[in-house]
Image (cartoon, rainbow, N blue to C red; front, side, top):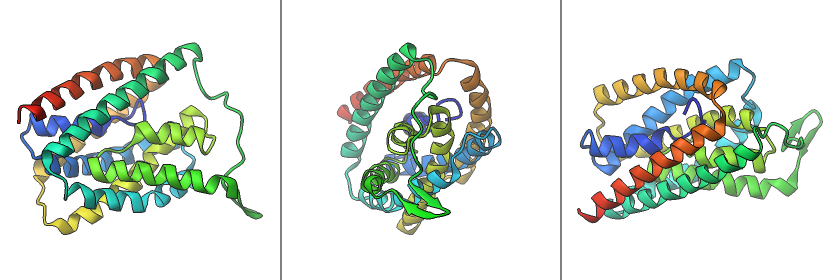
Length: 252
């Protein structure tokens, strides 16, 4: 999460299921806590470097709140086998997206040269770019649903959405995506809190603590290593995890 602005929960969910023995619902809920806490550390780190668009991130995160709530409710009504099969397919989709993004990054070292796009909302004077409200609402709702349903932060979807819909340069999109994840994870956790699910808090906080420390290291690595190299390696890891998830689900 520190280096790529996402991806932590994509690995956390299967790790909690296959290495720790949690159920998919427990793992996805634990993952929301890990994502939220780790994102706090990451957003502070990126914020100090001026790589967080606070206004745009708040708007995007709040617009995705309904999607996060809906995804949380839906995840509790879906059979575990269906949930894990969908998660495995999601991993393959994310891996393909990361790989294509990496190849594009190899041809264009950085996306910070994107043409500046006017802000969606300005306060002085008050003005809203109505032509982009619907695309932003749809993108935010979709990301929020992914967060609520799978327990993932959705950074793999937030980063391109922030660059394409809001026009943020890549490095600011990575930092801003962490702010969006905090808001989405908080809403999703709030909905799941009423389900009566009890978390293993010692495990959850230990996992989150290690992840928070690792995100600081990841933030430094992300500044030193070309993004397309990190994305390529991460895409291959996701394929391996996806295959494991789908095979384990098929075998029951």
